[in-house]
Image 1 (cartoon, helix red, strand yellow):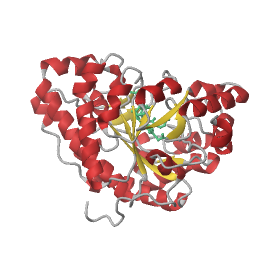
Image 2 (cartoon, rainbow, N blue to C red; image 1 turned 180 degrees about the horizontal axis):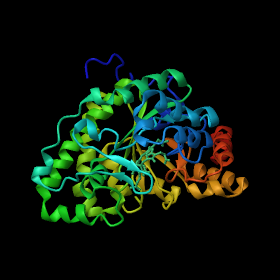
Image 3 (cartoon, rainbow, N blue to C red; image 1 turned 45 degrees about the horizontal axis):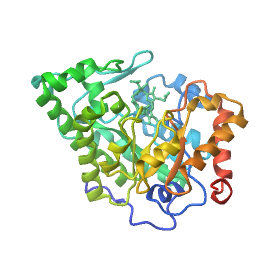
Image 4 (cartoon, protein in one colour; image 1 turned 90 degrees about the vertical axis):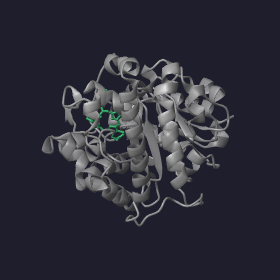
Amino acid sequence: LTKFTLTCSAASSSSDPLLVKAARGDPVNRPPAWMMRQAGRYMAVYRKLAKKHPSFRERSETTDLIVEISLQPWKAFRPDGVIIFSDILTPLPAFGIDFDIEDVRGPVIQSPIRSEEGLKVLHPIDFDKLRFVGDSLKILRQEVGGHAAVLGFVGAPWTLATYIVEGGTTRTYTTIKSMCHTAPHILKTLLSHLTKAIADYIIFQVESGAHCIQIFDSWGGQLPPEMWERWSKPYIKEIVNLVKKKCPDTPLVLYINGNGGLLERMIDTGVDVIGLDWTVDMADGRRRLGSGIGVQGNVDPAYLFSPLTALTEEIQRVVRCAGPKQHILNLGHGVLVGTPEEAVAHFFEVARSLKFDTVSQ
Ligand code: CP3
């Protein structure tokens, strides 16, 4: 890691992007806004480019394409956060696990890990194999020039393990959930390996230029809360510890899909901001989390299919419920395929027009 010249960003400064200020809890006059999956299939320019480059791995592992796709929503909508076009599975080959993304099935892992023997493929993360991520973050940081935050992201160990153990997307998580009881030591070894690799990967992203990192434990909400406490949280906590030692000023956001049953349990992971999915009312979320932590979210992505007046009112309601401190405006999950681009543009126009003194009373 010493070969990277950029260092973790220094303590807060007034030139930090709005999103970084809000994530840290510094005063801001409106909430910063970005959208999960803001680059992708709902955009015509993306679909056109994807036709020319039909392989997802090519699109997400070629510096020029990563930069171009990441900048598509930036150029069209000027969000306050520009997320690198990548995937939570992107770092897997750099520590021994190959994968593919198929059009209909989604992520596929040819050799799922379920045994002692399977663990043998794992090795420490090799950043030579992830140069396209480091290079892209560096370029994105120059391209957005401080006008927006550059966002990096990772998958949490549990969520990555669901793909690595099940071999792909699952509805029931039965293989990995039964492994918690039939082969706990194998799952623990896998999760510990992922923890170290992902912590190093976050530090690599920050040193390459990411202002802020989102940790996706998207499938953490599939566990009963008591199981999440044992099989996901300790590993997230360890990642936060390792990262905060090296990059104490980089805000970390934790998103779990379906986290209504987990909110209070997420607080002491040590992250700065908790993402709320749209099934949690923002006011309830704030009340349950207390004032010591930020929130992100949580407009239902389906509102982008509603009349723009309804969308405007919902954004204002969410912002009022979240209050003026430490809120990042976002959707409750990713933008849906088929979302009208006009609605996305409107979401960001409304976000930019907000002023806390007029909407927060
Ligand atoms: O959606 C979430 O809960 C976020 C976490 C997450 C990502 N990838 C982040 C991401 C998860 C769970 C994945 C796994 C994955 N990878 C899936 C979901 C499959 C399932 O199990 O339900 C899929 C379809 C992929 C492959 C993939 N990743 C595609 C086809 C794309 C292009 C964008 C699109 O949706 O068309 C991605 C990009 C991606 N995955 C981003 C992120 C944060 C891009 C950055 C962004 O714009 O937000």
